[in-house]
Length: 176
Image 1 (spheres, rainbow, N blue to C red):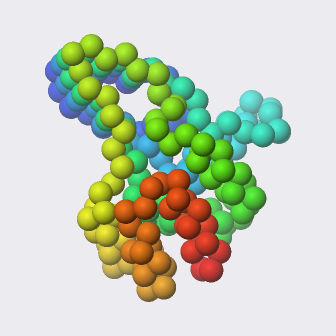
Image 2: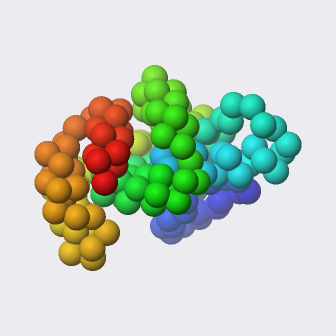
């Protein structure tokens, strides 16, 4: 799939089908899915391609930005946690699959799924700020998606590096 932004601003989700993101005189926000969603997409893709071995989490996407800006926005801890909790509860993924994925991703968290070409432009990966993390955790708690114990644990993680937070998320989800 190719995503075009010309003389404007758009937002799109990073999926396995997104191959090229082209921005000309505009801005594009690419929303990176949670790790749980990446694992789920990868498992589906592996099954549809008839591959039963180890599945790949990421495919490369070419981001071409001319006279504009492209940013990759990463999910918050609350979003990561709610998706992980749902997948583990439904037994869609196993704890071992999650642990392997965290281990593989911790090797490179810098946006390695992108090959970029920028001319008079900018490209960046944006991690949520501590205040954004706290806000999303509180909203998820208000909606009943996380309980008080989980909320307290997530609030303590706000501001951690993503690779460290994913390992801690596993511990919190295991205690749910």
